[in-house]
Image (cartoon, rainbow, N blue to C red; front, side):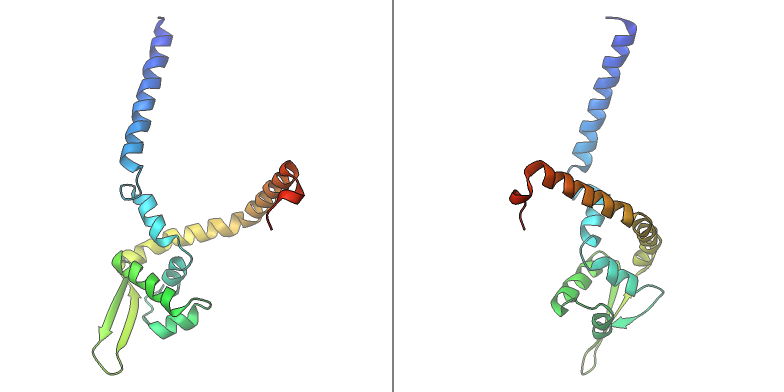
Length: 152
């Protein structure tokens, strides 16, 4: 075996070991910090709730419900509980009748906002290209399998 071949084999083995270690370390959603966070905030409503609570705004449940149209009370409750469990939203209950509950971002939730803004800017800057790509892909798919076989 030549020196160059030996180096290539060693590099391939090292790359395979590295890939295997990465897979072991991040293969499950519980172990991968990025997948874990995106799984929690990547649903339909969490980002919107975080953005509405931006700038130190403290809102009651019904105020949030009014700001975020089309969300059911149950889904807003589930979303707020999830964000509270992750330490992104603080829930304060005032013992009075009727009960008063307020929601605001925690310091951790506030620290996420610049990244959400970057993602928002990226999405706005690239959405037209993404839509064109999706349409192109869809047209190629229809052409490949035949229009009569496309589910409607």
